[in-house]
Image (cartoon, rainbow, N blue to C red; front, side, top):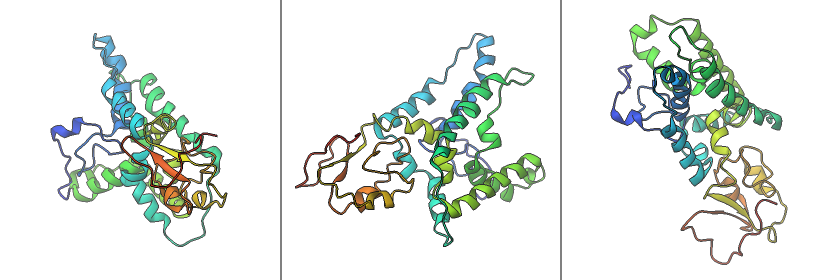
Length: 273
C-alpha cells in the first residue's frame, strides 16, 4: 500500500460485493461496477472481431449476492459506507435528504454504467468507464489519493481530471457531514442494483403488525429515513438491522434460512403491506 503500486494478484479477477477500486493499492479483488463498465465499453469492439463477451460472470455475481442478501453489503461490508457514517458523526446541524433524490442513482446506473460506455466509442472502438472516471468518490479516496501521495511518477502527471475528482469527493464529504450516507442513497449504482433484489432476496425484514405500537423508534434508527413498518423491504433498505435492535417490543426481525425467530415471538404478519 505505501509503495504506491497496484496489486496484480489473480484474486483481482474475483468481484467483491462492494465498491472496491481496482487501482486501490490495497485492493485484492475487483469492483463489480468497474467490471460491468469494462464489459459494456468493450462489447462492441469484441463483437466486431467475432468475440461475443457479455460479462455474465460480473452480472451473475451481482445477481447471486442480490438474491441472497439484497443490499446487506451496503450496510455491513462497504468501506465507503463506513466512511460516510463516521463523517456524519461530526456534530453539526443535520439536513434530511429529499426522497426524490433516491431515484437519481438509477439514472447514474443506466447512463454511466451501461449506456454511455456502450454508445460513445474512441477511435479504436472502445468506450470509457464513465462512472469510475468522472464520478466515483470512493475510487478517489481509496485509489487516487493514496497513489498520488505515494507514487512520484503518478504525482507528476496530475491534471484537471484529478482536480475534478477531488472536487467531487470534497463535495460529497461536505454533504456527508450534514446528511447520512448521501452517496449510497442518491448516486451509488451498486446500491441501485442490489436494492432491486430487496423484495425477493432470502434475507428479508419481517414485521409483526399485531405487536407494533407505532412508536416510530425503528424509523428513527433507520439511517436511510424509511418508514420501516410500512416499507421494510424497500430498495433503499441497506439491511443494517438497526431497526430490529431499536424495536422495544420485538415486532421486527429478519428472515434467512436457518435463522430461528427469537423465542416467544409470534410469526410475522405480511411484511409488505
